[in-house]
Image (cartoon, rainbow, N blue to C red; front, side, top):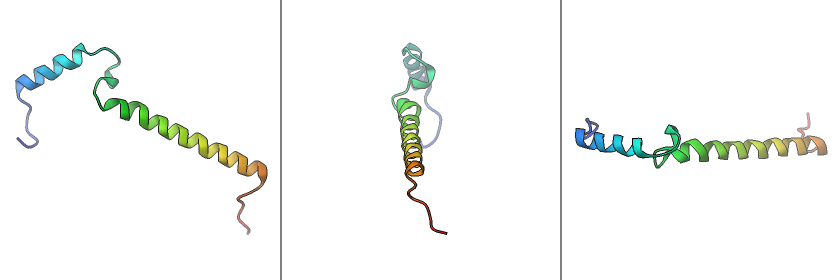
Length: 67
């Protein structure tokens, strides 16, 4: 079966699994924590580091291009 339908038994089993899990719907799958938590957290940390670096460079008057 390549890209076809999931058998009804497997679908019902998956539905029961997801309905029995506690917590928000978007964090129920095993890999959903990566896409919902880790990636935004990494982007936030990267952004904050770059902003702090830019403010530091501006305050120290370094990193300017000679025109």
